[in-house]
Image 1: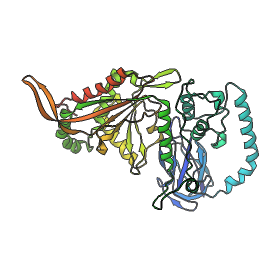
Image 2: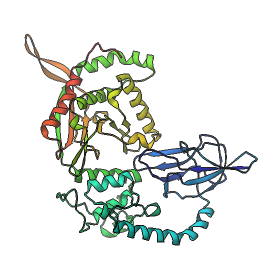
Image 3: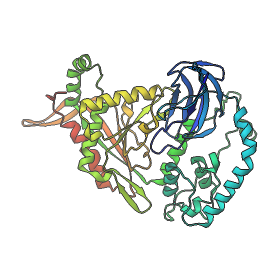
Image 4: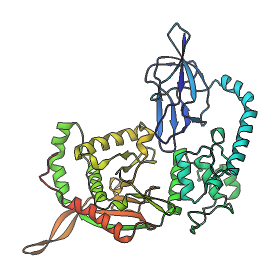
Amino acid sequence: MALYELVLPKMGESVAEATIIKWVKKPGDQVDVDDTVLEIATDKVDSEVPSPVSGRINQVFFREDEVVQVGAVLATIETGEHEILIEKSDFEHLSEPELDLSAKEKNSQETATLTEEKKSEEGIKSADLPNSTRFYSPLVKSMAAEEGITMAELDTILGTGSEGRVTKKDIIDYINSGSDTHSRVNMKEFPPSPPTIDTNPENRLRAGSFSGGTEIIEMERMRKLISDHMVMSIQTSAHVTSFVEADVTNLVQWRDRIKNSFEIREGEKITFTPIFIEAISKAIKDLPMINISVDGSKIIKKHDINIGMAAALPNGNLIVPVIKNADQLSLFGLTKVVNDLASRARLSKLKPDETQGGTFTMTNLGSFGNIMGTPIINQPQVAILAVGAIKKKPAVLETEFGDVIAIRHMMFLSLSYDHRVVDGALGGSFVRKVADYLESWDVNRII
């Protein structure tokens, strides 16, 4: 019998840990290659973890809802080999199951005292020294920078993560605590954080009265993350929204003409999304100062054009897969990537890296029948474009024989931008530029 040692693989450039959501397989269960063993979650995306080998789950070392570091051994699988062998799973794969905690509990008592001493030493060391060696994830450091939390101040925050690491929740709790020493973004004044809401149903019932028809629903993990991110964005950026209306008649007629033959030839449906993303990419190249982020008093100009597309999940939550280097892809290439990311997003098959690194975001409100909206900026970006539903409307056209009224395909575009660094001239010019690219669509274009 051989034991295959399964570890948490590297899931992305800036992903150092993941939370175990659910063990699909338990100790004693049989698994085949590529069987889903467990589900994990990072701050950005949920993923299923397949088994790289066939065998029987022998032992697992973590409970559900525990945070696990990349490279940690999650479980062992008995394979059909006769040799007694421990192997490391490749870091591009992953596997495990529910919980026989014997090995973990056996070591926990022996290491508890040392762990506490280590945390104490690290806390003293990081508080006393200007250059702390304490580890912080990129997300934590980014949130700290956006909120004006200095490194010395960050070092004083008690971490609840693995090995005492500071997590996103620790940062949010610290901000909401209203610490006297906490100054936000170079002492700029921001509205006070909203009061903490007690989500315990029993406490809520004691605090107020509810009718017999009231149902209290606890937010799921992803909804809490979205909620925190949206509130943080509003508190960070000075939101302004500009609108334009575009005549996309040529674009609609072109797509109607080629969509059936394109699907037969390529096996892919061509939607409006890749067309919008192409127009956005061109506009960013024309006006690159919309493709930035803010770090304190510094403006970080991004040379890569990575477009995030907000996608609604079946459970109502939202996720934003990112199309990397969108300006370097043809319309056909964009169509392939958009369809692939959208399909895997609905199946929770996205990799953590595929939701990171965005420099600009687009959200399609038209897919819900909405004609316009004022989206919230996806931090740390400084702008987000919303596209509304395309509707037939009477419009005035200028011709050589005078003005006429005709039925045209019209749509609204709305751009929310961070007025700290994007002025109205740039924001308004950018959304107008995107509309111009859509309105000037070549009806004879070949794809």
